[in-house]
Length: 382
Image 1 (cartoon, rainbow, N blue to C red):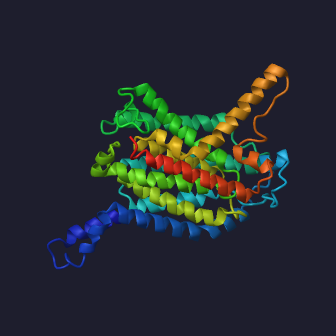
Image 2: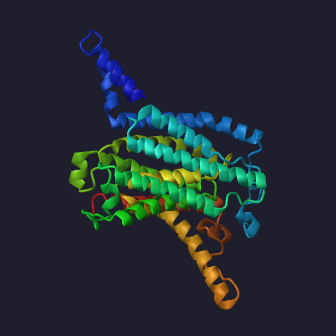
Image 3: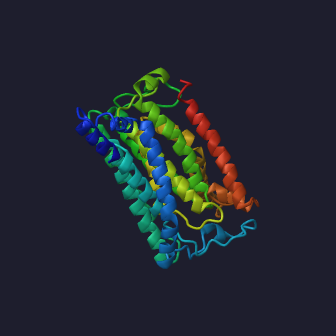
């Protein structure tokens, strides 16, 4: 909105006495300026909304009054703070801050609108799941297959939409992998649709599984978001993209503005979510943020880079799949289910080993930074 207003007043002033005084409005054409504006706006909005949303959630009694799975399992000797009663659904403030900031500072490019639409859909799905958990008081929420169906339908819609549009069809039909200059597959419609869907669904669920400790999911999201802040800007600049031999994607620069809004909103939420958390993002935030990362990776033609940058999310998701798979296999084979980890997702395994919550979170941050560095190296090592 700010971009369109600035250009309108600049065009109106052209050829008049106001042309020189209003010449500064041309600055709003630059992605860097609008990205900075989006980040600051989202941060301030998030900080302003935080106390109000927390009070509102407490008044509605939208708190985590059930014991989480880690507490139910026991063995959390290092956990000294009871999380019961802490408001959840804090993802509302993240989504609101991101949406408003992106709409204010970004051009209303199809990429931005598609990302915002997906963000709202996944946030709505997460909100419904959080609400079901709170009202049922059993920590079950929405059936997992229901959430999966909604996520898959969203992923398929995005994949088919991109494939059907001539300007974006190559984002689906050409398969790019890290460290390679050229597509490893071309004309791969079915493979591309499957990859787009898996990227969005997998990322959304992986961030959701990581959201189990104070500040863990939002902090790792911030780090991964920085990677895509850089990569969306590179993909939007023809000269830089050509020099680095990465896919040039017209319009990707507006995703940089979205990434900046996501960064500011997440940073503001971390202020209230750091240990000891005043509010949890819940599925409202985690499903939406994970889905947003997946969509951005698809839109800049780098879905596999997300697999590297989000290595912590991948490890968390893999730990759950390995644990469940091995338990079912050994139960069928030996009559008694066995476990690979003390508890899954992976962060709870380390809690059971006696690590303090803050230790787990900080060390996972370090690991996430290392994954981010490797992901950024794919820009040059090709």
